[in-house]
Length: 499
Image (tube, rainbow, N blue to C red):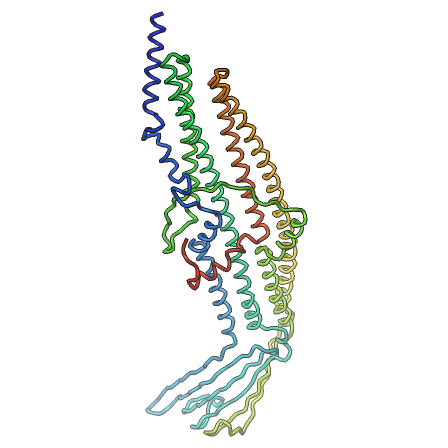
């Protein structure tokens, strides 16, 4: 009998020390749950919404800023292609003496101006003066020199396109391609940020559930310990209450670690206006189910994606670029004949024309092997792109159907989880009343509470899955960035404010 009393006394003392170390009003600093949840509500910190995250990502993220450089690259490409049709100054001077006399004294200066027109015309203005005792007769002129005005063109080739015009045509596709590339990168960035945001919300909400469950266990432990000391209940109940508190504390620590990891992941998408990493202290919202997509909208979504999905736009522009290369290769199958006519003036007045110079130049391979190879290569590339476009359209349709299936399944799962949470809440309340009336046991009550916490977490996870599926659906249709594109453009001129 004495050993049993000593054992009970030791148990009461142990439980009493544990209860004093974990009173509800005085939490242990090592297990301070408020430190794990610095922003539990809007009273502590501002609520961070998905719209806030997306706008801030597009405005301040280095990835988004680098993405906007595509416009400048496209403008530089167009400028480079237009350089093929700008006038060029061609000048040179050569001088050599021998025995104090001019042996060679040649000056040449002129302008060549190609035009973006069929037959590849080029305007030429040229001044020449060739003096000296050892000068080539074809270069030798009088001291006044001679002035030439002329035009060269290719009558058999260059009507549909030529090298410079093809380069300009391809460069003019660059702005549209830049827009498509920006949209593709922007949509991918928004999808990643959205998923990171919902993962953070899920972790924070799950952390709140674990926190509430621990607080309930701590309050019950204090009450059970008090009753055990008074001899109203067996001492083993107080030990079981302490064990439950320790178990829920471990669960809270795991949830706290997960929430911290998700917060760090989401913080990588958020930056300050000056480009430095932004501080992160926000409260998570209570997620609601997204709107459902009916059958009619599903059919419209596929058609919308075919015109809005950046991947398809990029492939279509690449096909147009390949068609330009195909036309150029077909033009080069024709003989390259170049005609040139010049009016020559030998006097001080350039308009005093006294001679005419004409010339013809033919450059024709015997078998056109290189040219035919280029045509075949362009046709192969074009056929390859057409086949890839078919696969891409099928992939886009599959992306939409997959996202819609995931959204529909997640909504049904969330509704079932919500119903399960409501029923589990009723069971927990009924068991609480039975326990208070002395008909139930602490073990069964703890099980009911654990089941309720599990049901709450399942409901949160189901709602988050639906919201992530809806973000994927927006990405699949190419519309995830629509509400933010105009705001992003205004930011370049300083029209968008801070958070």
